[in-house]
Image (cartoon, rainbow, N blue to C red; front, top):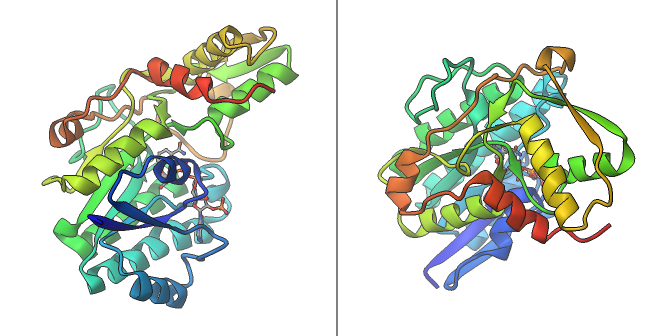
Length: 291
Ligand SMILES: NC(=O)c1ccc[n+]([C@@H]2O[C@H](COP(=O)([O-])OP(=O)(O)OC[C@H]3O[C@@H](n4cnc5c(N)ncnc54)[C@H](OP(=O)(O)O)[C@@H]3O)[C@@H](O)[C@H]2O)c1
């Protein structure tokens, strides 16, 4: 065995992808809410004392971006306090920790992809708590911490934009989708590959960015999901997809209009180039069971 990994959020999108792709020589101890409540400090301490992982991969998070505006304490408890507890436990036993984070730590941009060292300016409770979680993990663990920021994550199984779009296209004649927020759809499986690479080749960088390649609006992404879904027989008819502006679809949380991460430091550190988002969308849809 080369590494013993404590994986949090094992039932989530990324956690599931990580469980399915663990490399040979790696033992994964998966935890989800049912087996370990991460806000329970004593339970976390006890599990880590017994398992003594060499690496903690913390994918668990409060990820409901709009709901977080109404539940800031809950978001804080998971995204900041639980991340801090894990970092302290990692420091106590000399383990490394990979902390997942988000493009939403950044605020309004001038249309240039974000570098890891760019100043953060979260626009939402979710973004602020994820940023504070990053800070806590870095402060506690220094070179034993790796912050991996990603964006617009989806997988073939969980509730997410892709599975939600397929369902809505089946149920409705007309869909309105935001066309003036730009980002990069990212397949959880591709991110999982990079995370496993990062556990094997510890990066000299403390913060890295990883998304698929390319950019899209939510509208472009929806149109691609429909086209690829029709081709695969996951859909038997098309809906009319209409572009709307974010201002026509008010949400509780503010989101940046242009939210693209520059992944070049991760590409250099890990020697892996991201696939274009549409290529990965095809791979993900190949896994979706027919309704
Ligand atoms: N999804 C995105 O678009 C996106 C974008 C950028 C960054 N990220 C980051 O990437 C990481 C992985 O995201 P994801 O999409 O895989 O998230 P996800 O599917 O929502 O999974 C997160 C998991 O954390 C668990 N969890 C929450 N609170 C917990 C607690 N107190 N104790 C134990 N488990 C708890 C959740 O369990 P329950 O389901 O029971 O709550 C869920 O299974 C997160 O750090 C997220 O912030 C995500």
